[in-house]
Amino acid sequence: MLRSALLSAARSPVLRSAAEHSALARPLVDRFVAGADLDAALTSVRTLVGDRLVSVDHLGENTEDPGQAAATTEAYLGLLDRLGAEGLAARVEVSVKLSALGQALPGGPTLATDNAARICARAAAVGTTVTVDMEDHTTTDATLETVRALRRDWPGTGAVLQAYLRRTEADCASLAGPGSRVRLCKGAYDEPASVAFRERAEVDESYRRCLRVLMGGQGYPMVATHDPALISYADELADSTGRDATGFEFQMLYGVRPEAQRELAARGRQVRVYLPYGSAWFPYFMRRLGERPANMMFFLRSVTSRH
Ligand code: FDA
Image 1 (cartoon, rainbow, N blue to C red):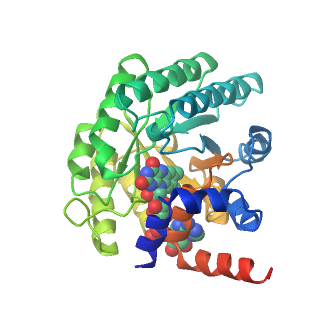
Image 2 (image 1 turned 90 degrees about the vertical axis):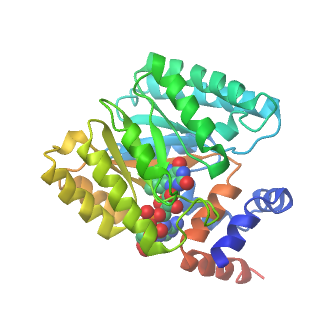
């Protein structure tokens, strides 16, 4: 209930504008977002790469403005140039949302694919990769189509699949081929029961089924979860399917269970941190609040204590 309300608020342009211009929310936002600009983000990246890998996300989803989609694309090109110039590209890739690159505009899927192709080309030039985030279920087919198109020239392009969707086990099977980089997450949007499992136990069971398909396949699974039970399950599956530490990776969000990230890295597992930065933080931040009610209470306390 609270989660649905937060996810619905995340789509409100009025709330978004008010929140992103308010200094009040900043302290809690800083827990999940590594700064408003690239310099701030790179400061965090340099610290993290000591023991972890990173995927950097320039925030700015759901644009309805072609100029904004072009600006986001340019921001990614600038980010990749900096990763290359600073010798970070071997340990740091980027994550992109197609809705930030114009997917929702007229002719959007083609525009977003073209913009993503420019980003993939620059990533390859500096020596790194791109993963295409997955958004709400109305975009799944178009997003997978874009990933397939990008992989013709850049086979290392990562796809994301969401275990809460009923279709995902089948998508895992079709994306488990040689070299296929697939991030498996639970899913962060408010989806109807017609397309998605709504109960936590069902989502977790689907995650396990999907993980078995990916770990048993020939691709490169990227296990994106903070859930200790699923992390242990992935560990066991990796061992039982004969994957060594370089054959898959764990992924977690910036600011979420950092001690668990360090602990996994210390025992030899590859761990990648998803690190968002930028001023358009509201929808991303609201999804993080929705994942954990305690974050919401902390947020409300921090706002009310200032009055
Ligand atoms: P779950 O929500 O059950 O959390 C397990 C435990 O982790 C919690 O009990 C808590 O301790 C901790 N935790 C989880 N979230 C927290 C939070 N926000 N604050 C504090 N503690 C928290 N989704 C999507 O739809 N498309 C995408 O492209 C991506 N990409 C992506 C990349 C990476 C690297 C990660 C880790 C996640 C995503 N997600 C995503 C988000 C994902 O779908 C999911 O919403 C969150 O990861 C939360 O689910 P968990 O698997 O962590 O389990």
